[in-house]
Image (cartoon, rainbow, N blue to C red; front, side, top):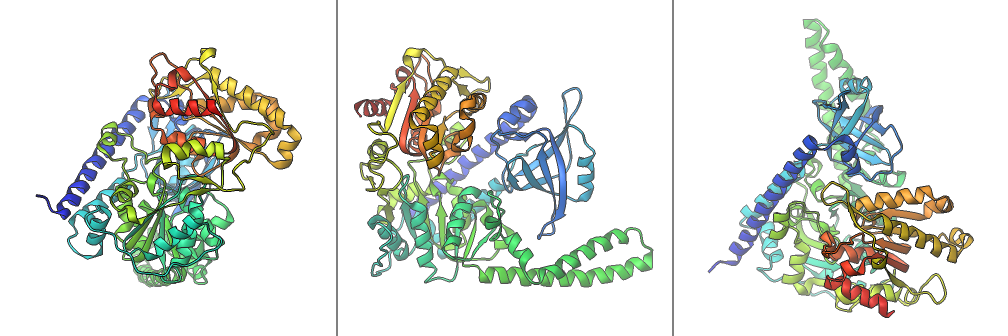
Length: 627
């Protein structure tokens, strides 16, 4: 009979094997894209910018040489460039072939049509500035995989200490323990939120804050962190994505908490930059001296190559003294920044940053844990004494590209496993403050065992009198056909998109232009398929009716709307075929996300004959028809 430690070890070995399959699959996918796909297709997939031009440059606080790279033409195409991802530059030759530059580069931050990249040095920028037909694309990133493999190896091999104990508790082999604490009262929170905060304070190893849409998960998590900091000097806060880290960090700073953000934020504004490590480093009183010394070293190294023998020896001695002083200042500034911070915030992979070496934390909070691979969660857990997982495993899952790895269970998250193996540490937030009750009720029934309640202030909220909050507009009789983009899984449905735009215009006319602008009523158009998103955007641009309202209309994929909400949501499901094939619409968690973005009005466009062969869509259509 296997011991409990052996069971957890075998599960982790399986995780490593599945992660290896995902790594190899993604690497091969990148190779095929590079060899077989043209520039235009790579641009549409969001992994390439072309044409671009290089802009201003500077040395950042980490003494890295950085340069701006801008798209030469304004482009709203969604892309997947983000902080920390490696990129490569290329030149498009006259015969259509591509010549890649042989030097590494890493994204420092991205905003709109501009990104800042870390380059090896000024000599590289000179080469980019003299290149015509310049482009930049994502390079296959194995850094995150290396860090995840390393974390899994560490947790598998450990035999004693806190990490070994956490491994057994999180895998369900040992019971999760709690302190006997008198519950605190937080009158500004609802009862389920108060229970969640008290649970976080009481647990010794792990807690799960399960936050369905609109239930105030971030509010609850911020309160739990705030209360924890009354008992602990410093905590770590992580999330899978930079956007999620930025969001929780901003809410913490609003509470007056000193946050040190490791890694540049994705929403680049003064408020966000103010708590990054780089900006804090540059604002330190010792930084001007450090900057002057670094500049002197760079200039001296340039002269060193040209000077005579005796002169070089003298400069080397001087360089040695300067570098010692630089090191002293860097250590002093770094120590001061970490000593002042109450919260260290970073992505899961970012927790392996060299700045965090040998750092330990009493408590680790992982937000959006239901979107993170288990292996990624183990990276910061290795630095912590206890862990609080927050998220909703009934919404978007982690991204897993390899079908075999997905079937094997790579997409099953640590949050899901703990929720099953340690149900006593799970707190469900059950009052939502976003949706009209009719919009909420189907989601509550299908995903949350009818446990959600609409707060009184949103229960019957609506825009028009005698309006139905949820409508399914059946496109079957229109005989619209889905079309394939030619890229395998890409789908779009022009007839359905055009119908949606007509219905949007009709609904806006019923509300009235003046009221929309006065009350800033906003609209979201969602499709699971990127090709349909692009087509919807093109239709909106062509129609002058929508020009005054463009700032109030957003069009994105389901992933692009994660964490957002709008007064009115319109969903285009695209699929329409005689075989009843619905592809990844079969993962109904995506539909849960899409539907629950709506505050007051939800319009679903879909071919009933195709979609209702699936039990979820059949039940949803029947629910809408009965309203």
